[in-house]
Image 1 (cartoon, helix red, strand yellow):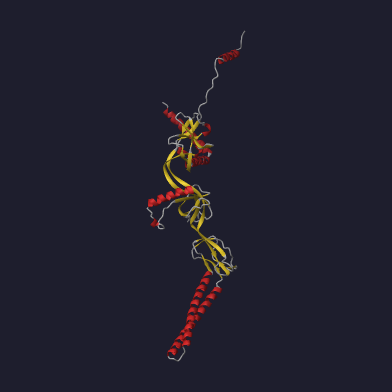
Image 2 (cartoon, one colour):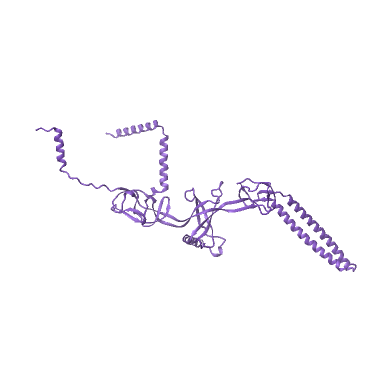
Length: 432
């Protein structure tokens, strides 16, 4: 009996396969990326939230009654101390000043007359030609005239002061608000009418609160600076320790504004358990960087550590036990390590406890790593994971993409052909 050739081939294949056993092939360990913690000098900061406030705020009010004659400024402009802001109708006060000056002239004339009559009565009395009562009378008249002069002089000062109040001037340098009263309105009738406000916010203040724990740390820093500078109690008010303070707004990265701690309240508020403090910051740009009433992030340096350990914040996991890192040992097995973290520095987290220098931390591929399992590690430098390094890499890639998109298609093909030709010629030159 003859079998087709194809049937014989299939039969031989089946017989050969029956002699093999199915065995489980274990998959290779998953690949992960590891890096040693970065060791560098780190400054520890206390961080707060606060609000900005003007250094000086003055309400401009009408100090005399009268009709507002004119407004001498533009809303929102900068004014100098002594600049004219408003004019109140001065005619009433000019007349009052003239009347008091007339009273003074009358009092002086009365004094002159009283002196003359006193001298005449004294001569007559000495010559026994007049009575003593006449002399005493004119001496009293002279005293009344002296008092009238003093009263008239005081009225002149008051009248001149009221007249000066019709010229409303800026009491400080600063930025003037809008006018709240238009010309033609009566001001100062029953109260000192609010006309506008002048605000000076160069420099500008930032107020914030310290809790008791942070306050004690800040006090230690202040004591250390006082000791370092050799400040004695006798130097109080002459020189003091300068604690730097940094400020950032809600739309700013980091803390670009540098200032100094300027003031602390006299005691802790027992209701809140906090101490109010104030920082001062230069604000001389035009337009200014800071205006009153802004929410501010603040931080104050407390200490400098020389050998802090930092890892990428993306390498840190968290569960019910707390924050942890995944590390690999010498056998490439994954270990879970509970840690305590500190501040964030350029995308890297300071590790306070739970990590040693030189240990291998899994920074990428955490979802493929399981404690106790083996992995295949690939090492990188932790500095490549900083925010600044990643931003620089992204900008470089974007620049390359932009350059390629601007290159004409024909140019790109021509450059590729030239590269291929050059590669071919190089290979031919190396062939014996």
